[in-house]
Length: 100
Picture (cartoon, rainbow, N blue to C red):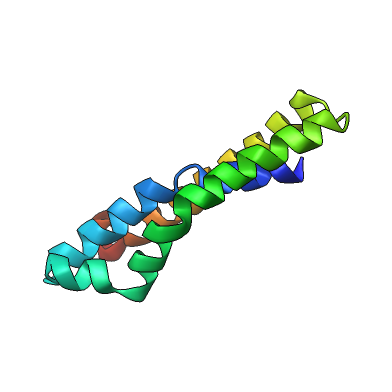
């Protein structure tokens, strides 16, 4: 299940980077500075490798006898994690929450 969880954690990485870059731009940061920011630059450089490596490891684990459903179960756990994370983050920052 662990490799499935890792794959699930990596899956939305580009969406998260896009969201972060959009937030930084709306906060007034220019595009060149955003692209040079260490967090953005590093993650843009390594993300594809992270995703490819996770998928390759899943194949190795499957070849050793792990059932695909176990890997998928780990991925489902990651989806549950992200669902809880983002719903909490959005609720905490929603305009309605700030008025309460």
